[in-house]
Length: 238
Image 1 (cartoon, rainbow, N blue to C red):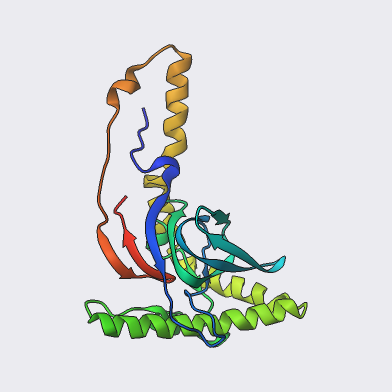
Image 2: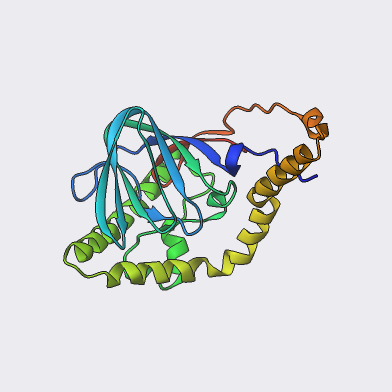
């Protein structure tokens, strides 16, 4: 029988305190980006703000206040705006894929055509002092906001091509990793539906043996305050 011991629905969970750094347009918040294979959801647990999104349908701003549940599908360019101490529980589809790089930042076009230039622009220094990491995180955030604002302006003028070009560039950047991502997915999230199917088959046969394999899992965050794309992260291994 197939077994799956990850979090329900093969999601990944983290706690996010959204950056309060001011941007060029006067708003405070995170780094605009999209995911190529993973839906993302927020449960607001403190503070207030919004998530700005860009899709082929245009620009949208969704309020985020305590208790709100908001989610969006792959391809949604999103930017978190922190108005007052915004804190979220973040749910990511396909546990393991987001951590494997399933995200592309909305850098200006010149930074998207060269994979080496892109990686240099988005990388954070490893094992550097916190102040050095913060400067790097702010610099990449500011670049991504620059690109985001240009995409938004084009959409609001009725020109969808810059967003479509960004989609194409994002797909080209991650294409070399597609096989690796598939392998991760096959070993992880893809095993969740077959496990349920096996359990339903067992119940159809009147069998209950899988219930004896029940387990309880518990863990504490494996890292606190890590610099992420949208804010400081408390992350879990699951």
